[in-house]
Length: 245
Image (cartoon, rainbow, N blue to C red; front, side, top):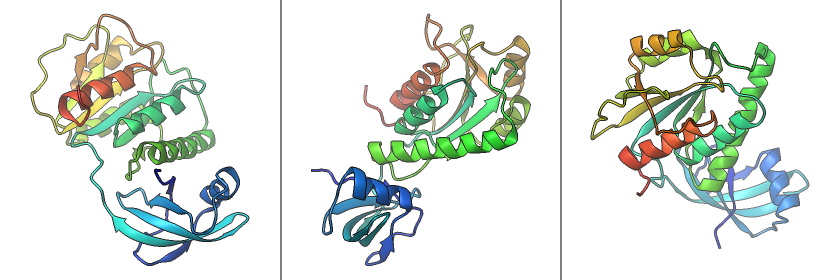
């Protein structure tokens, strides 16, 4: 049976005894009803993984002994950055969760001209904290040991400036009118830019082109804002990454 996996922000050193954070401790003790001597798997978000044994359970405090520390290679050879416009409801949660499973290394939420979500700085910060927790949960489920970086939401122009300074080998903006120029046979890093429900304005597409983005059409159908980034990441991982076709 696979060991349950949990994230911890603490250093995982062979032979160390640590007390897990409140959230995983509650899940271990109350939801899973695990017991002393049970085994589990821990990861620290930087690529390190360790097996551990429960030594004590006391309400919201679970103590473990750390064993068998390793850095198994589970990251894709393709470094992907997803730039995604904020969207309503739980769509962003779905995008963050599934993009994490698909191996995305960075997620840059951005606010474009037709973005329907307008939040103040405090609520945006809370949203970012929430998305980080969603990513942690996705890593626990899918077996990744490295957490994706989730950037603070930024304006479209600022995001394009940031992308232009990034050393990505390829920059694609998903657009239903993309001309689909031939893609390279090899690619080690990609920035994928996806718009809001209403799409990008013509001026935004032009600005993206000026920042080095190539307009790319995934297919004959117009995909929803929560479908397009996941389809794009899957295609990229199948072509240049570690998804089998």
